[in-house]
Image 1 (spheres, one colour):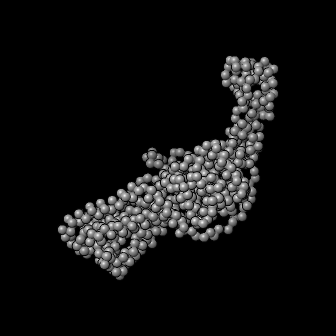
Image 2: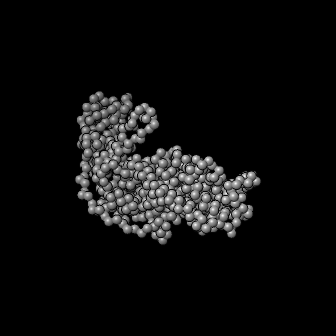
Image 3: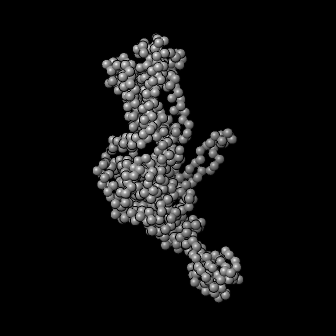
Length: 618
């Protein structure tokens, strides 16, 4: 069974309709669609290393991202280790992806911490990770720098870590996109040796995108050439070299001791150009197919000139790359029959392992900004101080509507600002996290791993919700120490029950916000509108009863209104479950409606980004 099988893959990127188009009365974008893949068909066998060559914009990276399920094709089909691209989780378990982007790691974590995180995404536990790290450390010489922070590593070290990450889970297919572009020659040689060793030992198939012909010839025995989205050549390096010689012949620069009349008519010369006149004279010649440079030199000697130096110009392979596709597809191999569909792999669920990895990652990242951590603590104290003194004025005014929560305004607003933060976290953090992953280049790596979307949504915000829960505890602790709250009057179990549908509803709103940001990249009206309405009408800073009846209708349409009402009853009045059951029912309805809607919206936005090829754009 081939490790990779592609048949008639087609991908066209359509430009988006812009405001300028609408203002000019156009209902379609002015720019034509870009065809990135145009009927690409080939296969790669297990243990085979294949070089994918072509000019910039030929469609090579699009092809790799399509195979990695990061771009959805418009037509055709592909199979990785017997799994169709629609079987995304199985495909991602079977591939390892290496790009030339250095920003696909978390720069403030060490190499070991980065590898541990991505290993968890592939379901490797600590024992499996240590065993695999020993093997990869020996192969790529990681030990001298694996515990160094990633941003302190050289380009060569970063690429070694990238290759180690791609090979952690022993993939069947390794996709390499210019892995040595920014690496010095010595480092490149070391990486080449390590790749060859691992491929020979594990039988991994490799598809290598490179502009370095020396690298391609050293590693690969088969070349694919792409031009304008089409596969124009599929064969061995010698076949490609023969194609170049058949097309134009060899190309040389000759230094002659004197000018020669009629040198372009010399036997064996197809065309030529005078580079420098005088004595000595320099000419550039392209030989006829199958002509020998020795015969040309002998003919020039007969014309009275002596050849001082001979310098070969672009080789046959370089010429063939320029010419490939100009006269139609050449040397294309017949496509193997469609391999049988492999059964889905029933790998054990490792969601808790993935959740813990996200929590550890975010904690380490957060603690790496120690000043921000200290500033957050100071912010809590300042918030409490401001509202404590503001509450003295409101309490002295004896606002009647506050009597239902007790006569003191300070505990009322303390709970408001504490739990208002949950909505802010849900609305802002998920979209912000995705934006951060895009900027770091790690989003594509996460989505190229067998990480389910629901796990990504929950795990991305798990640390922030956990941290904000600790922040809420800090607010409540300050309230207890200041005597404004009483532990004896708190129904903590009821408050916990209220939190469950509250967080679910808020998280759903956050997914809607993230879906919008994934689509338009900047400017999120969902976040703005919900934040504004919650602040004004949700009862955060004042009871909703002080609003006019018409505006109270808006309050009753917001989940935060019921959440804060139930929380205040539980924490200020010691209300039992029966006294907040109506709020719990409403919050449960919000959660049941908003959660599927938010997940569906984000799933569709993510799928559209894969169709547009904009996962890494921000």
